[in-house]
Length: 231
Image (tube, rainbow, N blue to C red; front, side, top):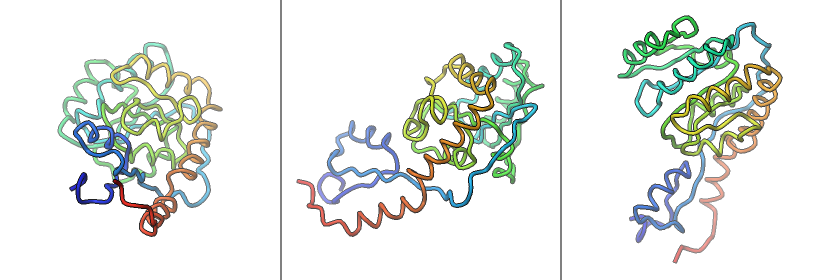
């Protein structure tokens, strides 16, 4: 249908177009319109915390690779950094994650919240957002973190590079690279002004590039577009 019947297929991420083009889907009939998120209102202003909070909100699934995150947390602990890591989610790997926390001897700096009903508050209580996914499309949790003016440390997968400007709104790291992730987190833990500045720039980027208003306008423009059918 994509190649011979449809005028276009709309994707909400570039990672999907890359994957399907390798399967023979016509590139000239692919359009990307990223999802939007409501960022109306003023940016949330946080105060420097005595114990900074690193936060992850994701299901307890293999593709989220919590184990790399936990190894990075262990590295930070061994380096003597002062922080707390809060995990919020649910899923089949819950017990495995709990076991890994115990084996890595990092129980004293981790708080695990299973299926919490106050996710918005948890974003606001945090100082840094962490995502160690092995694969993504367009990450809703990263957008939610940016909406809360959090700097983001994330793996360079899916469309994360379109959300996170490396060195400006956060840091990107290779998959399964706990040392890279720990290094990036440490830069932020050591300089709270960077936390505030990068978080503010991330909020503005979200507002400029990924707002609900832009999402709707792009669809309206597509519907009213008189462009010729691909040949």
